[in-house]
Image (cartoon, rainbow, N blue to C red; front, top):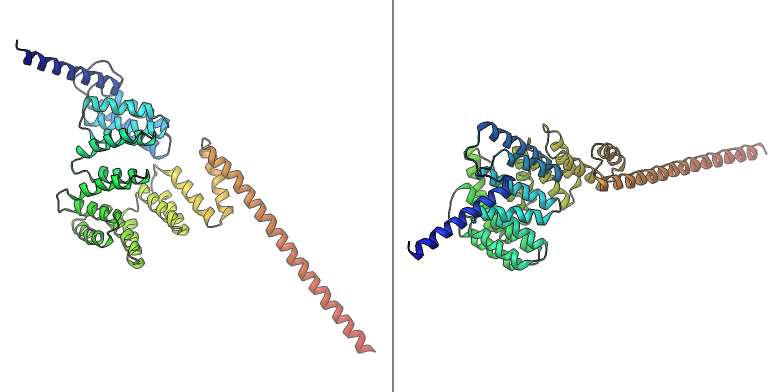
Length: 377
């Protein structure tokens, strides 16, 4: 056997060994078994759905447990489904303040598939959060390399780096994304949003108008209307902005996550009444997975509108339903204090008004009596 052939066999064995170890890490199983029955797949999808709902509600520990249960159904088989669930588990670990565990999951995924862009992206986020910009930038570079036409990764790379004070490094990825080829609605929408992020609002408008036209023709839906509304705002066209915000909300009237997003955007702009309306519409949808976030948003909007009594009443029920939210419990005490002070001020004001009216009435009686005496003289 030649030396080159021996080396090739050794490399193949090492790769296989890494894939087996990665599979064990991903699923918690020590064996690579073949086949994954239909029932196991259904169970995996069910646990995954529970995990996603828990994530939306901020119950990250519960999400982690359910994502692991979903992975356990695979019996060691690794498919795109399992890789996707692994990334969701890693994200839940990240949000649950378990960065090292999240990195370990990303490491395992990349040991199994070195071209998995999402794993590089999330691990880069974790390194960036830890202040290791060198490792973060290296992972971001790999994420972009394997992103293909996934505009979301390019855009998020920019957003993350911009927030970290590395705007120039982030703009590199926006420019790379603009080089992607394509003339369909998906490309037009994302290119328009990229121009929006770059501050080129006229180009953004041009791309997004085309995307919306195709969207309306095909009956499909994406974020083109939302981005166009934001672009119109930057161009000072409030009428057009309102038109497209309304259209976007109407097209997502049954999507509680979108309505929460619109509420959050309105809060950032200081449009608290609109924000409250979006949160309330979200709560009116059927079984909203993000009910807790919608209720917190509604309470926050009511506070900003100085509707402290309504906010207090809703917070009273909220803390009963979500006792683990310690911040909400503290805020509830604050709201009770605010409403108690407001009630006291109102009582004092009312008492002062009554005293003033009484004094005024006494003065009129005295004048009347003096007038009668003078007439009698």
